[in-house]
Amino acid sequence: MAPKKLLPDAFTLSLLGTVALASILPVHGPFVASFNLLTNIAVGLLFFLHGAKLSREAIVAGATHWRLHITVLLSTFAVFPLVGLLLKPIMSPLVTAQLYTGVLFLCTLPSTVPSSIAFTSIARGNVSAAVCSASASSLLGIFITPALVGLLLTNNSGSGVSPWHTVWNIVLQLLVPFIAGQLLRPVIGTWVDRNKSTLKFVDQGSILLVVYGAFSEALMEGLWHRIPLAALAGVLVVCTVILCTSLLITILASRCLRFNREDQITIVFCGSKKSLAAGIPMANVIFSASSVGAVVLPLMLFHQIQLMVCSALAQRWASRWKDNERQSLREVV
Image (cartoon, rainbow, N blue to C red):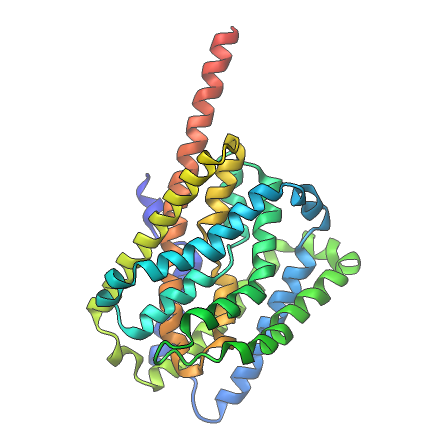
């Protein structure tokens, strides 16, 4: 893998810069209420645009591939949480209680849509099925994630979780704007599709606002005094282990279930990813303000690790596909 592939992407650098800025100049005092209102509006706009961008044709094109979708959903919402729970004896000594809460929250999140599709395309997988599967995961996660958080974290001390109560808040803040965007797609869909590169700043900007607010609150609560450096290193190890475990499980499961090569690629990339774009706004709704900063730290680290590892994997599979294609051409000639 080329050295530049190991470097953080621009958005990850922006996240790190936002954390640093919040540590130096946190929002506080009379500005908090106004900033929280701005953040809620930005998150609502984010999910509104996600609804407007989701193509119904793409959903129909991949919706009939039910075996693949069930496999991806089971990996995302069943295998990941089980891995998080089963590895607790190993993970708990490495991280603090709040960081372990963040790890379990990470395990409950839906798959990420853009990078799952992009890596599937690079590796020559089933792109239409990836669009449908990742989109379905993102939508279902609005309901499944808070339910899983309730099951996994209700008794976890210091989690600040009130998941059953916050399902209604998630519906209002995330699902309602999403449905509104989907209903208005016939009116604004063409404009949204034409301006995707510009609108990504709304996606990223809303996430940066949530991160800035979360870490401002965390700083006021003394986050960096509560999390030792060894625990941060432990989170890196934990996130790497969880990602490698999920990749191994999806690869073996897709082969044992006798999916073809294209579908195997789709299952691996859609079933092993977790969404930063959905996770940070959800954490902002589900958890108390004082705990959001620590909870989203594992997700931010997992995001960068999954991008680097899956990028290398996609390029390797793409190279292997090209080599096989050249070999086939030689045999024909």
